[in-house]
Image 1 (cartoon, rainbow, N blue to C red):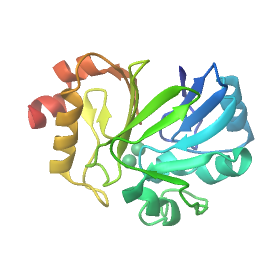
Image 2: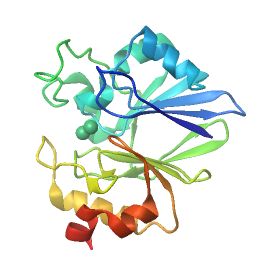
Image 3: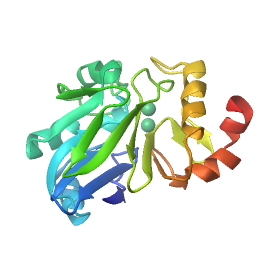
Length: 214
Ligand SMILES: [Zn+2]
Ligand SMILES: [Zn+2]
């Protein structure tokens, strides 16, 4: 599958990814941090076709603020872990209150996922790993055939997500990272902020993992 990283501009604070299965023409947008007509065009320029899913790594405002607009425009199904689904309805939990100038438009999740769930674009699998710690409902989306892992605010290049916000739990984050580094082989790691990395590089060099996990 084709995976493209998008910078959605100055109103968006997180990385957004477009996943497209060329064979079926089905796409997913991961963490639409903002939405407007320009961003809509960016999605299509990045190869998005029939947008089937809006995949959310967790419920923080900087990852979900564009969900309502994109769902409205595309009819895509909103996918989030069950523990973070309420963030889509609650600007206090998502932290959009006080951080965004516009009000958060409430949106219901269409599909609440949990550990081991599998979604498909065409025939291509997207696996869900529940990796709580940054929030209770953090997930990673794994594209096994392409060896790509979208890690949200769980694993970053050289560091990991903070655990001092609502629902955060450091011990859970450590357990989640322990799981990720136990996965065999190498993966492209696409985090929620900052630059892309690889699983092998993070196993060897990530300072948070070296200090807290190993
Ligand atoms: Zn977050
Ligand atoms: Zn974030």
